Image 1 (cartoon, rainbow, N blue to C red):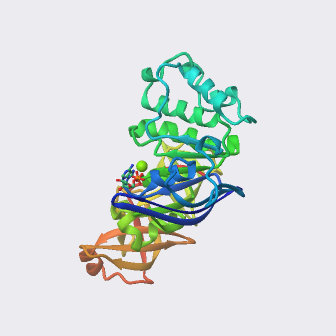
Image 2 (image 1 turned 90 degrees about the horizontal axis):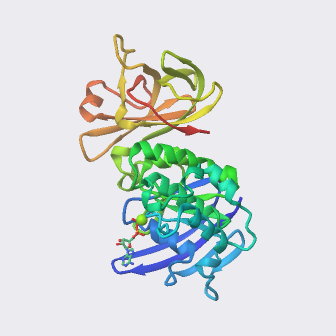
Image 3 (image 1 turned 45 degrees about the vertical axis):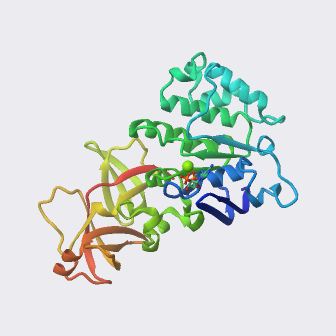
Amino acid sequence: MPELVLDVAIEKPGFSLEVSERVALDEITALFGPSGSGKTTLLRIIAGLEPAARGSVVFDGQVWQDDKRFVPAHERAVGYVFQDTRLFNHLTVEGNLRFALRHGRSRASIGMSEVISALDLESLLPRRPASLSGGEQQRVAIGRALLTSPRVLLMDEPLSSLDTARKREIVSYIEALPGRFSIPALYVTHDLDEVARLSNRMLLLSVGRIAARGSVGEILERIDLWPSTGRLEAGSVIEARVERHEYGMTHLAFETRTLQIPAVDEVPGKVLRLRVHARDVAVATEPPRNLSIRNVLPVTIKRIDLDATVHAELLLGVGAQTLRARITRDALEDLGLAEGQQVHALIKSVLFEGRL
Ligand code: ADP
Ligand code: MG
């Protein structure tokens, strides 16, 4: 697995970025941070698009930049996917792809037919980019990046301009790329749902510094990071295995219990990654009855965090995994909740994020 070793700094009016980090690029690594935190700047530094950046960038042992040299952008083996596709409108889709192929690395390892089939581009080939939907344009832009035969894909919020339905469509293409082409990706986003869907590991960027790195689950659970991750987004990422499908629902084995979610098209035995928002989890001290909520699990309160507002966040243990619940302080006191206590978690909704 290639390693990216960064020790870089840059100053812009009113903003500075300083990053020293070794990133093991395995499949998709998410670079997450709020708007203005410096994600695009960092990606551009890696790609060689910020000549004012100081320090060093070393990819898989190759020095792309240090105090003696600066390898220009076109000689770095990166496939860059811009937020705003940047396709050539005077060329057809096929023309755009062939252009990339011609201007890519001399030892091209990725061919047209592979890319066309991986991204379902066949029917788009004769068209002009301007006549395509946003999602189709992004697929072409990703194809173009791949055709330069890069060693790493750098993707800058490729889904941010799309609606939810289109996002879902493209995410499954993106998800499959690292495995299919043996290329890791650094994927920039400010959308935690995308992070949870695409990646197990993330770097959290906050005002030009890496504030945290690690598994998506761990980072979402850290209360000290809420100013960057956004507290309403807080929740947990869990893993569960498909057991069976029944009456439009899929039953999942979650630790020693069963979770039900609206049917997903995955075969029994598959392990799925799911996301549960803290605001979608409630707790009860007695097993509730006559309830519309399907998912009620016995859990242990592992930790109670109070914040500056009227809310409390509970960390709930379910076997080896954890869930977060967000309740009011009022409820906390009324129910007399304490750390170590056994309670029941009522899960209002579970979002299917992807397959592991
Ligand atoms: P993100 O991609 O996380 O939204 P950016 O890397 O685009 O963040 O920007 C980080 C900061 O740098 C922002 O405060 C932005 O205003 C500033 N910035 C980015 N590019 C320039 C530029 N060319 N000139 C001046 N300031 C810039
Ligand atoms: Mg940006």
